[in-house]
Image (tube, rainbow, N blue to C red; front, side, top):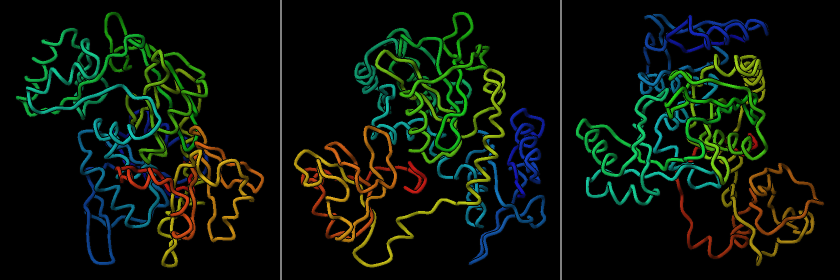
Length: 397
């Protein structure tokens, strides 16, 4: 394959390791500075120019988009997508993950632990918002800060209110977040590649510093994640649509709390701490994805009027509860169960002998008329369409 790495720093550890890993597996690699692209938009002819010259063909792109060029970098990645080139992380997923509030809003719909958070603009709403997240101390975060920059711990409510008011006066957007005291000075970085965590480490802050980022002088140690933490990390990355992500989790008393999901996680700290070839795992994922690209089932399977994809919860009153897939008779009524989500664990392509339980969430393709009768009445009344960038069902999300 011919792979392009979008990076402004060819000597950065992460960029060099990705180049090494790709070449070791027999691929041709070129590093392209994201800022040197020119986007050409024309009917039936999306194109890219690099340093003023037409861009040659690439099979895959690895975006390493810095926070300072998120908008332009995502535009370049989007253009590659329109040209039919596989991109490791999509432009939309990158832009969503860069916005701390937006990503938390999306995660909040799902059964994933997150720190209680608030976002306000009116100064009169600041103190009530602090109270709603549990009171001082609170963590204040700039929505687009990176590497621990723009993260402040406020010990008192009046101090927090003063800091927020000051930041608002400089046109900064601030997130107010509950301080997880039991995880003070440490967090977990889980490196997700595809549908698994390939490496994980615990980061500890230096001295009195409460931020555990390596760039702030923190130390690291390899970590074997338990099932609950691994599931939270993988699920968070999948919900935001990221194939590769660094998921930061707090170790709270009631389980993992997803603090942030990074679309361009650094490799140096995680590889040094764990001795895992993370770069090689990324290149291996690209090989699989280019060979078997993801398919949007909602677009491909809606071939006839009245057919489509539906997801619904099986409650105690459902005629499906307690029956096997075969006993439901759905196949005879043009409905195919693609997967069952049971307590956050996906069961893809369930066999006929698989029993359906109350509380299961079914992902089905088939006739709308049949599936409409299976949706609980309460769910029909409360149906919403929240923003989500879940990958297509075929990806196993």
